[in-house]
Length: 108
Image: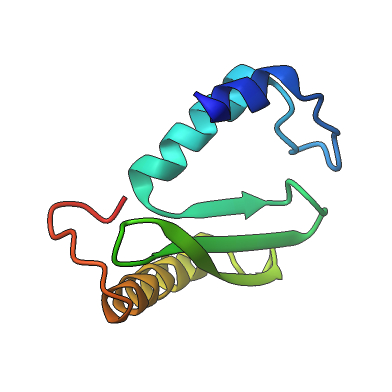
């Protein structure tokens, strides 16, 4: 599998104390992202910055893009992050539907 090869062969750089550089932790993190259908970057690239992303899929179920919101970690606290995540995921699903995506069983 291409993802495992990259994870276990590549050397990752630590940008902040929260950056995931351990291959096992990164693999588990990616599995969780796939299960949830969205990703949250909580100060992993830059201290004080949080981002939430959701995939946009085409008619062939291929991820062709993503929708992301970024903000200060203090502004995207737990309550706001949940609200924005819901809006973001629903918007990504709607955009995917417009592009022909039709998987009714699961978004991932």
